[in-house]
Structures are given as structure tokens and as C-alpha cells.
Length: 223
Image: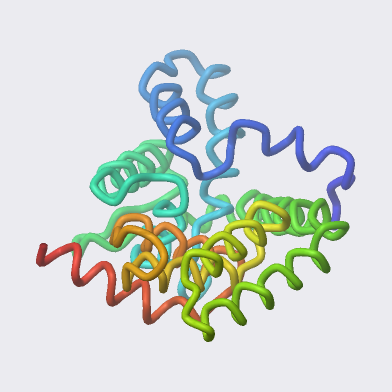
């Protein structure tokens, strides 16, 4: 990794895939006028592209990207925000929009994108590392929650899973909360919350939540 670990957090400050950051970046793209302005915005924007999931190494996986946004963005806002992000990156020519509405990385900037993806990955690892001290406790809380769940004490189960999430963003606790909000067990049924927790699990490499997220999205689309 070419980037000093101590600089990762500062380099990604304000450049992670959250609503306020994406909107700020889009405004920067729109207002950039002179050459220096555009260079500065380009250096900022490439980090957003570095966090987007790709298929085949070049094409933006729109479905997976949308799921990343659901972690921090309300279901009804995610499509508009993703469009705003993609259009800003297309304006920057970091992405090329194809006639069939696919978005592909402009390979002219391949080195910059590869570097940004390495930094984004290192950022995720640093974030996970920050929870290491609490991970063992979070796993125990998850196990306690599982026992409560199988005993039919759903409220205590939900509380235990939430504790595991708060302690260490434990992905299996996210998945369990997603299931409970989807079923309305121990908590008031909420498809948006179920989707949020399922996608938070996916964002932390919990692929077990993929099918559940797809099911919830289907229900929201037909609601």
C-alpha cells in the first residue's frame, strides 16, 4: 500500500458514500470553473469512484452501489442520490455513460482509481480495526441475542443484537436485526429499517444478507 496508514482517515474525510458528502461533491462539480478548481474537484471526486462496486473491473454495479447507499440513505432517496453521484462523476469524465445506461470507468484514470480503491479498502480495514477491542463482547451479545430469539423472547433478542451493532458493527447482528424488522418480531415491523440493516451487513462483507435485501426491495417496490 503506497499510502501512509496515518493519512488514510484524513484523505477520506468528507469523501465517504454518505448523503451530505455526495451532495457536497456534486455541488463542487457544478460550481468548478477555472482549471485549478477542476483539478481540485477531480482529486476529491476520484475517492467516491474508488468506493463504488465494479463488475469486470470497469463497470459500476448499480444494484450493489444502491445497497451501499441504503446503509445511510432512506430508501426513497437512494435512487436520486445515486443518480446525482453518477452524473457528477460522469461530468468529471471519471465515468463514461453508455447508451444502455451502464456506467464504465474511464480507463484514462485507471492509476488514480486503483489508488483510490486501495485507500478505500484500507479505510474499511482501519474502521474494522477500531472495533477490535469490542468485537469479542459484541459476539457474546450476539450469541445472547440468538438464545433469546430461539426462546421466543424477541424484545430481549433485538436489544442484544442492537448492543452488538453499537459495540462493533457486528455484521451478523445487523443481519438478525434486518430479519426481525422484516418479520416484526420484538420490534415494530419496518421494511426501510430492515433494508438498512441488511445492507449494513452486506457493506461489511456479510453476503448472507443479499437475498434478504433483494426480497425487501421487492416488497418496497410493490408497496
